[in-house]
Length: 339
Image (cartoon, rainbow, N blue to C red):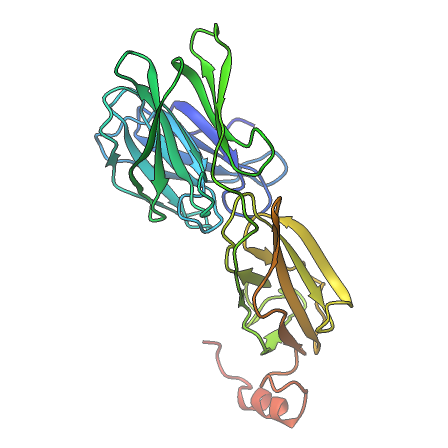
């Protein structure tokens, strides 16, 4: 079914921008100096959308995606290769809202192509772009991400053997470190690869964060399966582990040795996971931990596993049992209006 974007798109990026498991689409609209994100429903439809605008002097043509601030969400970057290399970063807050940063001038008079990728393994996307060189051939420039929506001054500038028509950041030799692949503008000399020389190490140390270890009284209503107030999602979170191509494996069990497993979910790219409804039962204690893995090894979370206890839906005072105290609270609030 057609969707009105409110303008003519010049580029598009697709990803799960809101973390609900469905693919979304982001379009840049040059004539309107805007970006529109369509949020998918997983069935081919886009029932919700969000549009935000760039400053009046922006003429966006191209759109890139990458985790610019290192929070696990895919952010956006727009640029116009014909306007001297001015960029705008659009930080994804993860809740279908975005923060647009002021323009950052790269001060490049012949800006050609750009790509995003984590080149140094710090979980923050870096900016790689090709610009016209001194002798008409292009140079490749690397600017490392600062993690705050901006990029640091040039970390490296390399001469290329020809002017590229396409530029991609991807792992070309299977070591988990992303490399640069570019294609000849005239399609005569084919393609070339610049291999990333950054050493690949096992994921760095990280800790579990939420729910805190020993949390008690976590509510599990019949419909909502959330905590601590019974509203929202049953979400476990941990710090991101530094490293290239890090994936996480979450284990939830009924014992501290993590042998009585109720859930084991691997291949997670983000440092958080929503536990499926119906997984946890009221009046139980659960233990959970996470391991981070890449091609160089595996790193378990510090000080794991953490534990949390769920309560019965009738355990109003959260003391772990259903008793007179709960009845007292219930009768004391009988007939009182809800806040």
